[in-house]
Each structure stands twice: as structure tokens, then as C-alpha cells.
Image 1 (cartoon, rainbow, N blue to C red):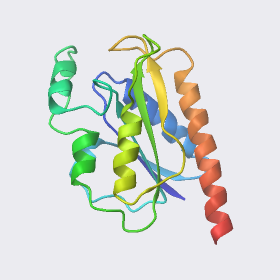
Image 2 (cartoon, rainbow, N blue to C red; image 1 turned 60 degrees about the vertical axis):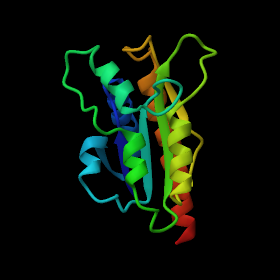
Image 3 (cartoon, one colour; image 1 turned 135 degrees about the vertical axis):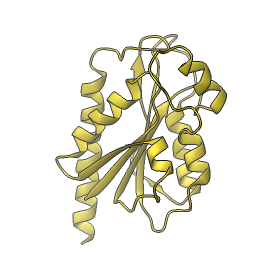
Image 4 (cartoon, rainbow, N blue to C red; image 1 turned 90 degrees about the vertical axis):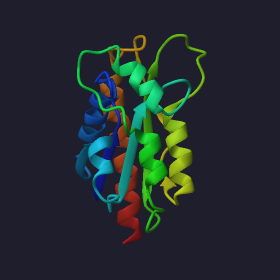
Length: 175
């Protein structure tokens, strides 16, 4: 099975989750991890499983303005011209019934805070003809900048292992 994880990250938390997800997928799949700026320069991947994720900004997928605001809060260089929203807006329809999953990072408090970039990405992927293999997953950070809450990397790895196991079983039953 071939999988690709495409992510957007400003503070590094979503990038760390993307790597943990890739680690979880590797038992069942060859995995490529790509940041969204690099993905925008390449053709849409031809894979069995596409996993897309980004940070939750203003209750959903980031926008150029929210990325610029976030980038102003860090000393690390951050790409703000393109995010998951723009990448999906420019993506062609799925060539076949490719399976996908989505994830996001979001602030842990307040707990009632609605919205998720993972849900927004999932809706856009379904409109492009992708088939959701799993419901969206949110991983929690402390405040806006993080760090990730304890155990979130392990939870991301376990989520991905479950996802990969189910997809591998589905593919092998189909053959």
C-alpha cells in the first residue's frame, strides 16, 4: 500500500503529528510525508491512502491572514502563501476512488471551542471524489503555539496504525 501525508504547520506541532502518523502507517504502507508548500509544486499524488492535516485557525482551515498572524508569533520561517485550504481548492478531482483521512491540531482549552481543520479538509476531499476511510482526528496543543499535550504523538501514531491496518485489510480483501 502507498500512502502520502500532506500537512501544513507554522509552530511545528502539526508537522510533528504528521511524522507520528507516518510512523504509524509504515507497518502497512510505503509513506511519503510532504509539507503543503512542496505538495503544491507537485502533481496530486497517486496513492492508495492520502492523509491531509493542518492546524485549526479561527474554527477551521487556515487562511492567508490567519497564517500570517501565526507566523508573526514565531521566529522560525513559515510559509504563509499556501495552506491546506488553497491546496485543496486547486486540486483536481480524484482520478479514482482514492481513500483519505484528515487530521488537525487545535487548542486544548477551552474544551467547548468548536471547529476543526480536519472536518473542513474532509468536506473538501469528499467534494473532490475522495472516500473518507476514517472520521477526522484532532490532536491537542497547549494554547495557540503548543507544545502538544502529553501523549498526543502516541495517540496520532496509534490512530494511524488503526487506519493503516483497516485500509490494508480492505485492499487485500479486494484483490
